[in-house]
Image (cartoon, rainbow, N blue to C red):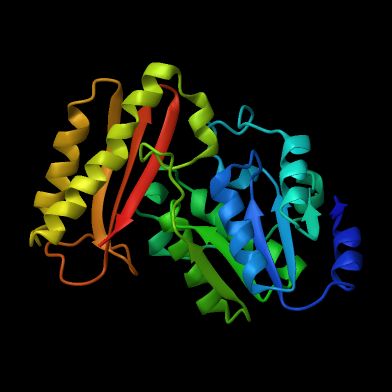
Length: 276
């Protein structure tokens, strides 16, 4: 496994690797969800590359950039075990030199839901992803369904800019009790960890009502809100039932829909979703 930390070394290493190349962009502190992305890339490509970079541009001024969990040695051991070929671990200065001035903005789909609550977040995501795509020149890139809005944003970016790669979305990996795997789960104390199960439980309830014929979007939102409200350690930020492609809120679920939510559990802000 080749590990590089500069753009020059990445370009040099990239030129010697077999095509096609699958890229898994990460912020590190890897878990089984990340490894599912690596496994999917391994199955579909001759070469698998991973980036590990905690991107300051996608964190707001009062968010957890400084305390975001990091463990590079553990991450590299996991990637080596998984048969990854190339890992890029740049510094902030390497990714964003002093004269770096470009920002990528995907428009309205980056300004709702997470974008409304974390202003500038998806500009940061789109900017770093566009830079990584330019550096790696992958044929495919892999993202997790847990970050559903991020997947929509990246697909829009690729389509609008005509980038020659496929975006592969891999299903959310969950703990046995349903909690979506997230690097931020490490913030939860034991009581909060138990309470956090209500997030996936509320989504499963909405999904069951949909399967039973419910098509009124506000009824589905209310089911999620009422379920979460019964757990005192969880504070719901929002719940959305939106068009899965445009993220426009729906009144009636008459097309593929994304039920998404965010909630505070202690100091952890967690997100989850299901597709209807």
